[in-house]
Length: 296
Figure 1 (spheres, rainbow, N blue to C red):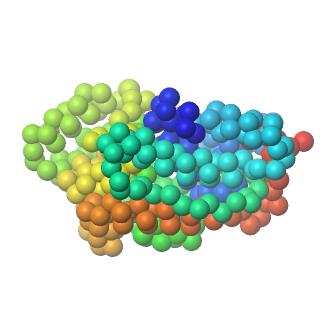
Figure 2: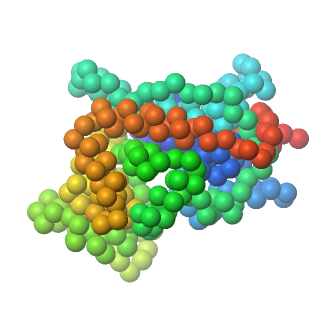
């Protein structure tokens, strides 16, 4: 992971996102890593995943190294969970060492022993995963369904501090209520104009990307929440946590994490552990030799 993050800091966000999308479908079982075959439809082509999930080759590389040393022992699901943890630590450390700060970022002990599923669910990927256009109540419902809390939802959304979004997913926001929620400042207007210039209202350029934290996009910090306070969240689903009249609890959490980075780091670590403990209660599982295919 260190090599991957040093080569491109965005790789950290890719792996954290993969872990999230894995755990919300059948539990943290590596099902998101499976390719389509004649007998199995994977989750990669589901609407929330297609053209969105990246970083599979990083997990493949790690799996190959681990498998060569201890074959049949470490599951792809465990590798993905550990890689997501290490990604978070690395994007914090590589910048904070430069500034010689003594404030520590999030870190956590990871439960191990997950098994890789023998199945995937295209249908659950389409129904269980939050999407950027959703309002706050449907997203809260999806987190509660997984056994996670509203606090977990707000804290885990903080991973967007190192992520990017596609134009297709924020077009409605920047041509919709962005001007309603954002500060009426020259800086905010300039930022919006830049977004619109690369993401036209008429369509096209769907794959153009913009950072969800335009202040410190490669640093895991609490800047994401400060952006929400200014009403400049890139995704509707993010800004709703602060601006929606339905988000009484979420607004207070956004305020807390915007002003207290250590509180955010602490809760993020706890919430990542909680999410990582979502298990597949149906599939007995195995330890795949290749993360893209079930064993034969």
